[in-house]
Image 1 (cartoon, rainbow, N blue to C red):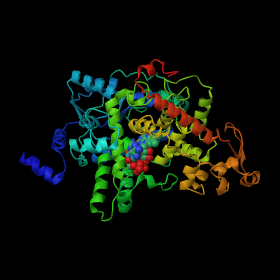
Image 2: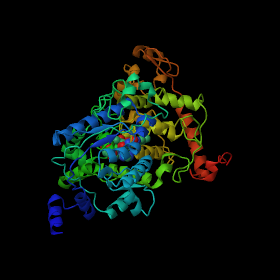
Image 3: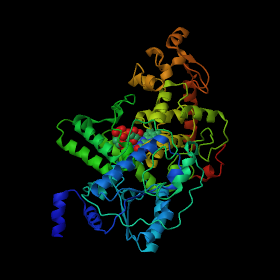
Image 4: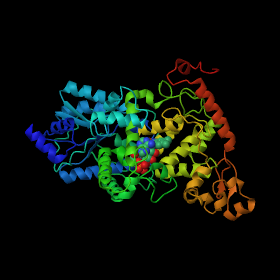
Length: 560
Ligand code: FAD
């Protein structure tokens, strides 16, 4: 124990007992070590993943593989193209595995998957070591310290978190790693997943070659986008730990920005550079540890002489929001991601679309379906909303307040369409897509959970204008309007014919098959829709049903 104390004093005064013991437990000195990334069909085939997130993932894998090779020239990242549930039982035997180490994942699907893998490990006599590092505090522990309840406010996180202990500091990077052992593949490989293949549109004949477990050349290599049959990515944002650490260090070097950061004061219309850190995709892919981010900010704060900002608006506040959504998801499990069955999610009888909740689903072809399509493709006829949705499609990232604007517009502040339909579009297009944060924020913006002031609604005209009077952001992402005068940039349908002619713009149609210089008509009269939505929301709040109410689940809510 003297040894333990001395070590702890030198590495960090703030490591908790448990962390220290955890670190010790990893001191395994194995004879062989295989860094593996498995290709989970749940994400690869069943989830809708846009090309920009694929590119980001491939960047991360290449960078990680290079870093591993720097630690040991005989090693790299072993990319295996089979579901972990079926792959690991075979690897345990074939590669004579004694220990399996992985990071805890509290997403509902991931828990089910990892339970299957752990059971297989038990049967094979393999010791499993699971570490929590994806959030500031282990989300399950956070829930326990919150009285076993989902964390629905950041003050609950601020109270429960410190009861677990200080946020652990990341352990130092290793200086070397052992060689990998044999990589025999003489076992039966699973046929490629036949599940509904929503990425099919991107695929080509080459798909057949990556049904091989170790890739077309049997070398466990990271694939390229073209090998996967995708077109080139359009995002300027690149992945990998090297980029993530550079980006963190650049942000932290601006100590005033870091210490005085106030989220509501950051402009959603800023681009190149954006007004917030853009570290979210790195946090999602684990190329930046959220705990490293946290401690880097704390280091800046401890040296900063001026008045620093505080949660909830400060940078630390942003990380607490992230832990809050993870805590809610950890407690609610599968029910968190949907309205149906979710005890914390208010039931709102949204206009039905085929993509939305089972509670309100109906066939395609409806007016709501058409609105959803126009929103998804940035063709609503409201330039501020369209610019944001096109930025999302092209680049895979939009500012938080931009997300507010489009999410409010789709749900309670315009289209009156379910948050689930919007969350599905974000899940495909965001490079930082994080199930807990995406679902939680959509519930917030739609006033179904976390936030309830449904009468506070964003205008698709005044909100953007307030940040960017001349419309530089709109001009960048909606090039049809680039020559439009400042006066009409947010409401081009109101412009006199002479102004439209001068700008070379015609306002007509719904955006489908539009010719050059044509921008769609707005899809509705906004004040009229806002009043409609407010009335509907008020009624739904008065009835006060939640997703787990039997009347919601059996459909008898109609007529209440
Ligand atoms: P910064 O302002 O620099 O904040 C630093 C970090 O704090 C972020 O990287 C992020 O990890 C965390 N953070 C900040 N705000 C939030 C928040 N409201 N909720 C959770 N974490 C936060 N964030 C995701 O990471 N993945 C998602 O899929 C996602 N979907 C969203 C959907 C909607 C409808 C909305 C309104 C927000 C969503 N967010 C999501 C939250 C937030 O918009 C992004 O985390 C943030 O814009 C990322 O940019 P940044 O890294 O520059 O953030």
